[in-house]
Length: 144
Image (cartoon, rainbow, N blue to C red; front, top):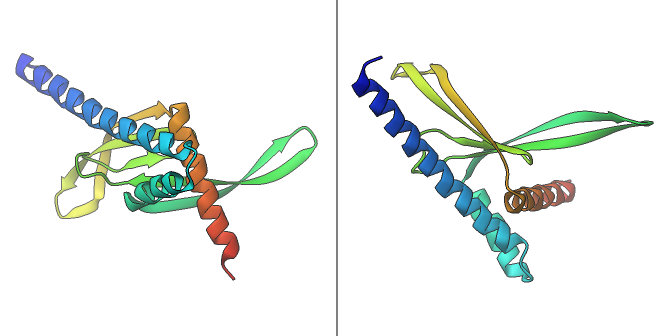
């Protein structure tokens, strides 16, 4: 690999990390609001998070343990933030970003993942995701 290409890749990687760091800082800020004493701040944080979420997937899994067989619901939130190259996937446990390359600019189905990064969520962000999940579950229970 040429020296110029190596430098370009390092710069690109640094740019992605900086953008992801800003996203994590924003999520931590929302997590602080969720853990605050005021109901208004909690609702505002959940609303702000959901406002940046373009898709939510829901999967049912079964947890097997000592003498129990419990269903659990796992939500994955997809954030599309303007300063990131690719949507961020957030579960209650981790945050993932895929960097894709389009083989044909017109055909999104032909995109291939060229890089995938995953981070464990900081405790404040987990608190936010748990609050959002509880909020969505509460809304679903109210549906007929």
